[in-house]
Image (tube, rainbow, N blue to C red; front, side):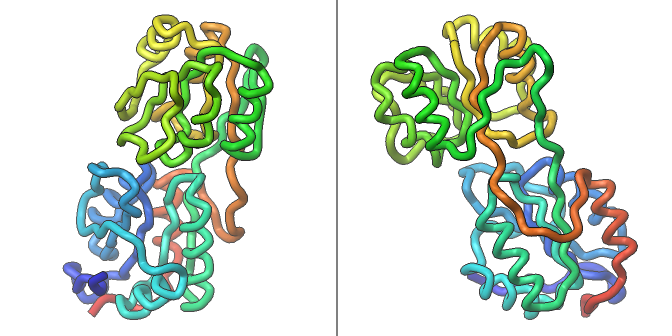
Length: 264
């Protein structure tokens, strides 16, 4: 892993390490790139083969845990670190919190609001993907649209009485269910498209994670309109600390947080 790239901004620019890959992270990168007071570097975990890259300077890959991230922050003379990763990236968020504490840097989390069921929704909330698979097993058989991500598909591989549409960005590396159709696709999605997908495949249950946001929320509207049950995986716990829900609020927080080293 190479060290931090030399700052390209002016001498007064404050360096911000932005951990993301989300829509909020890309929006925040645009705001920071447009302001000469900041020198932003975006970091993506590399879980997706062809990620949507933000504007400006970026890196892909891990840091070697919390200690490696702390070293990177020190070496790069960053002034603040922003965690705008996916709501289910619990390990990364924990490392960010530990590294910020070790270096004494200001830390902000950007966490989009959760989805909440409406009065006509039929949701079963479960704590983990494994619990979602157990919920399907308790129903004996059916047809499910699975949108929990490629790393969790193996949790459903033993459900031979179920048929799945497995929708992922990249192919799973292991454990596809025996009876399934693999759909490689990336949002955003439309309500019309999601409604058609569910009807065409006679879907009984949508299994998804509570990632929140508008990018992939059309499936919930389509499930409601089609009378499809939803098995919703709750978010893992996140570290405490300063938290906002939008890129605009994150930018305002960074403007108001003026302490820390500046780029040379």
